[in-house]
Amino acid sequence: MSVRKVRQKDRNGRLMQFWIIDVLYRFPDGARERVRRVAQVQNRRGAEREEREIIHALASGTDRSRKEDSTKGNTTTAEATTPLFREFATRFLDTYATTNNKPSEVQSKETILRVHLTPAFGPRRLDEIGAEQIEVYKAAKLKRGLAPKTVNNQLTVLRRLFVLAVEWRKLEHVPAIKWLKVPDPEFDFLTFEEADRLIAAPGDYSAMITVAARTGLRLGELLALRWDDVDLTAGRLVVRRAVSRGKIGTPKSGKSREVPLSAEALRALRSHRHLRGELVFCAKDGSMLAKGETKWPLWSACRKAGLRRIGWHVLRHTFASHLTMRGAPIKAVQELLGHSTIEMTMRYAHLSPDARRDAVLLLDLGHGKTVAKQVPEAVEA
Image (cartoon, rainbow, N blue to C red; front, side, top):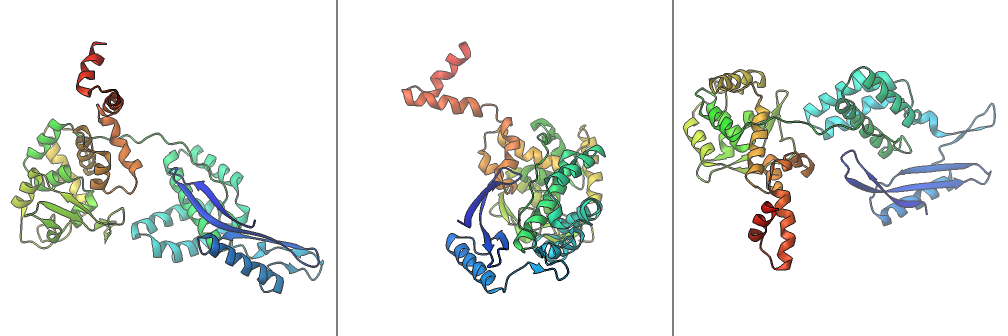
């Protein structure tokens, strides 16, 4: 069967599946041509219909990619039409990235291509880059001292480029890419007592610090927050936008989310209410604050509270850590943080000290025993 469903895992371990067409056609003169590509319509019926169209086109000569060499009489394949990496990289940025990615992501991809991938693969055709060449690339980057996570970020862009080449029928298949093993990222957060001290520290940014620690908003989301996103009566706010590299767009997950306000955050916002414009946290003239100028007030508050210097993202980690330590469901934490996958939120799961014990004790409920009776027995043992 030349139409089949392919299953493979992406770098995050998620199972992906898609229909591909793999036709090996034999011409009357004995020559053969293979057409292998991702189906335009991702279901069996659509893929089979496209397969019939390919076979018909090959039989009629309208889609015969080989051509006869007039001097040698040999058959040459369609490799002459396979673009060079540097040529396709330009199209990838100008056509795909600018249409489907945020400006910050486009800039990141442009930097990775310009500084790393194009110098390494630029003169090669796409079909000349295989698993061996990619392994050589990885080894060279690690030898230069780049972190495995940084190299994996580059490989992510490389794979996305190959996937697009297959979708656009410039390449038959995506070469195998093995991700480097990366240790779980460490994160810093404040204890309950440290967070209370920081919130109590006086300063012009005390309201912003309180909201950050009690809502988990990213710094870009705080800077783009408007008063019409905040409902001081119902006690909630909606994260609709974020600023990145000076440009306002959607939040990192690509969709908005609602965050209920704690009593402490609500009091801070009510006392912070001003008439300088639509932005909640802004400069004195109502203009948007730059990310760079917000670190100094936070460090000043840390000094007044007798704490180490921290960044704004530590307040986001603090919010998530405190929720988990208080027993909040990990799914609720994910939704409040705006994580697109549960894997990101699972970094905080180990902070729930009783989660595993309580889960195992649930087994005793089936034997007519209560968890309350089992806890003392386990302690005595």
